[in-house]
Structures are given as structure tokens and as C-alpha cells.
Amino acid sequence: MTFYSRIFAKTLILLAFLILIIMNFGQNMMLIRKQKKLSQAALGNIIGTSGDVVGRYERGDITPSIDVVAKIAEAFEVSIDYLIGKTKIQVDKEAINRLESISDLSQENKQFVLNLIDMALRDFKTKKAYQ
Image (cartoon, rainbow, N blue to C red; front, side, top):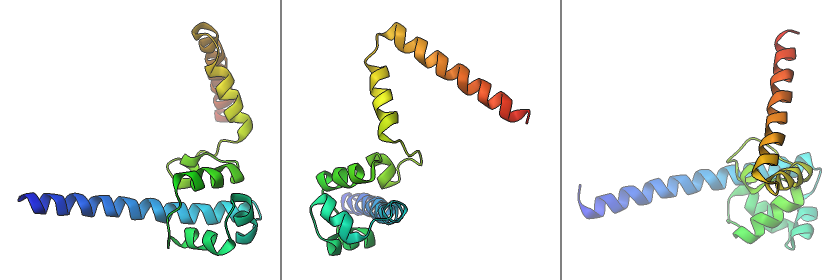
């Protein structure tokens, strides 16, 4: 494979990846906006732009900067990972605050809290299996 064909192949892969992210982002953005019962104009007001620009983000016509993506995620009260489709787990602000509090604990206390969570999850799964 020649030097130029390797660059071309890498460029195609990168472009395909970017298109996939943009498509997921726009689709996710529209779905979450509709779940939150916000119009494009209302979301535009919240993040400091117009409804027309929000529509262009949703269609994938333009790509927002990371600062704008952060504003959108904050307006929707979701993580950026959820917004761009990297994860299907929607973590709300309360859960994030709890995780931050846990991470501030000493290693011993953190392990104790995580063990309690594991116990509760195991109990829940067991009860669910026997229902």
C-alpha cells in the first residue's frame, strides 16, 4: 500500500466515524428535545442561539463546538456521552452529584459504599429472578 493510499484510507475511516457521530448527535438531540417538550426556538434561547441553528444541528448540516455541545447537554440535564450516543445510560444531575460525592470519599469509605451498592443490586436481581 502506498503512502497516499494509506492516508486516503485513514481519511475515509475518520470521515465515516465523524458522520456517524454527527448523525447520532443530531438524532439524539432531536429525540431528547422532544422528550423534554422543547421547541427548537426554546432550546436555542437556552443555549444562546436561534431555533434555525438548532434545526441545522439536528439535521447534521453543521456541527456545534464542544462548548455548545456542553450547553445542550446541560440544558437537557444529560451527559455529553449520552447526548452524542456513546452511552445509552441517561444519568441525571442527582446521580452525578452522588457519584462525585462518592469519589471524594477515602478509598476505604468508597469501597464500603460500593459494596453496599453491589449488595443492593444483587438482592434486586435475585428478587427479580424469583418473581
